[in-house]
Length: 347
Image (cartoon, rainbow, N blue to C red; front, side, top):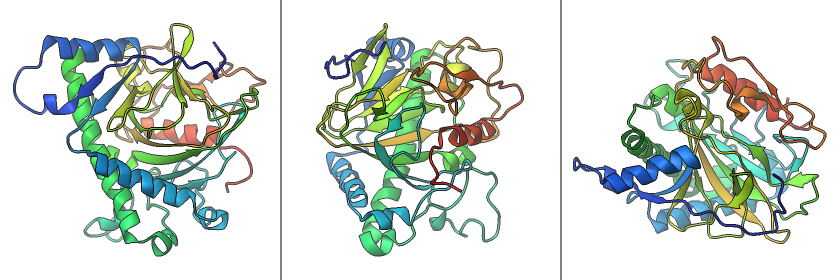
């Protein structure tokens, strides 16, 4: 299972043009079958959208690099705090899904409450523990209002693109997928990642093998060295970058609600040992109060159902299962972020 990560083995995944699903015209059987097969076989595929241009891609990648190029003390001024609500800066070593040190830093943000009319928490409190303001701190003063606008505009675009992706999936698999309502929109989030080059020595990794907890995950990875891999047919496969497209990973919640018919792929991030890597990841969640599906896919090996706070001793698969009976998705996510926190960074 832990094949040599220096061996480049690209996987072939279909690219789905979401604009083809925007009309009322019947979709081709070939297109629907391609998407359905990808979801049920790999749990991953590429999508493109006419609403996201190469100019948009260049702007958000530039904004990402601007943040990570800031002095350490500036980034550390917007630390996120452990406890479920994750907005702000996560330093290298601050999180891990295993015993390994994950050689990355990140910045997490979500729904822009500041632009609400009236502003959130002025006339009404946040409705759950995963809602709250983004941690901008002095970043806007240093990087400018335009920088912040690029990030918040990207969040709005990702929300719409993901909803379009769900519409396409519903047509492909022939069943409704429970979409987040407004509350789901306000707990979804984006993470900007900066991965450091490192040795693949068993002690360090870009991101530990895991499945994503939510409904869908969309990944933008610039034309860069290898990094993202998915596990299929007892082998790790590289997922190549494709400019202008997103990699879609189906999540644990979606896999559970379909009884495993849709795969939530095991994936990881590795290093070529020499190059930095950047990626932008949009985690699309269902409603906070949505109950986790019970009795469906109980034998599925999903990170959502595992205790990732376990001290591993070198085995990424040695995880303990948690019960889901009567637990809402939001409550579960609070647990999950607590489990993957590492080090003494958080209070």
